[in-house]
Image 1 (cartoon, helix red, strand yellow):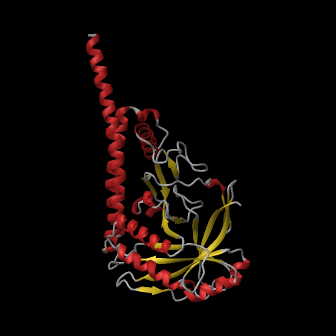
Image 2 (cartoon, rainbow, N blue to C red; image 1 turned 90 degrees about the vertical axis):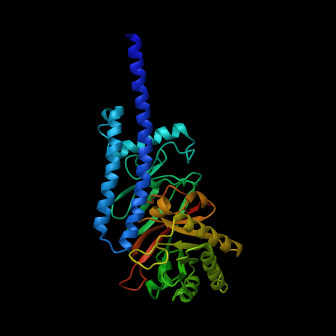
Image 3 (cartoon, rainbow, N blue to C red; image 1 turned 120 degrees about the vertical axis):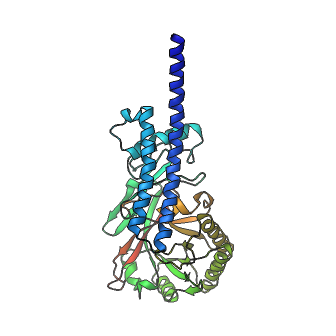
Length: 376
């Protein structure tokens, strides 16, 4: 009889181990499905489907996967020990701890939450990145292997009205803006008096339907006036390249237009989808292609003696770009939360698109940026 009990106990333990592995596998399936559903949703919305119906369908499918994971967790007995946690937090914590024991973590030194970030809210914990979009929707994504993490303490980002700042033992910050023809006729001297130290000026863009290269209508006047006001300058190009050859063409366009100017800051590659445009040439373009476009653009810019950079937000870092391949490229990160949510290295944070400053034409707003620099 004792032998039978031992056999029973062994089988129970083996079953529990198998269920845990299955739970972990389902968690990653959930992550993959979330990315695919979001991409499918964007595609279907561009095709004219009702956004509410698209996201309700995707939400229902994701909820089904989550219910399966929760059910398996109950079978393993962990649900009794974690009754106070949410289903989502429990899944992240348990799976992340198991993964760190079985394989080398993607961010080897990070074993605890990044300083200033909450384990139960936005941030990084056990190799899983949780973030929120502007509407308050929560997203999760596994971190990219070999991608360089940032070491900023998010609790040290402060806001005074529309002005942001960052200060720690190694870093300080500078305030800036980014502008284009949409901002109209800018009085750069007034911006300078309000503490604006740098600006990223749109050099140009590629048309999203026919694909022609265009110079921003206010590029030349902004370059001259900002420089005259004593503001440091960088430029960006709004890309709609669909392959490496077009990305290199965009870089060469920038190089040609910069010959008459001296700049202090990087040349930024700004790839974006065109929301709601059925005929946008980048519709359906995959993340690997966008990543390769960025690398080609950067290499061409660097060969001309300039510093390259790429513009990205949470969604692009989590689900589009391969961040592990962009370690040598500067990051300009856009996020309109109280503090930046990116776990990856970046040096410029675009923190608002609703800035109102003297010198910006009445009735228009301007993007506000914070550059984090090492202390001298």
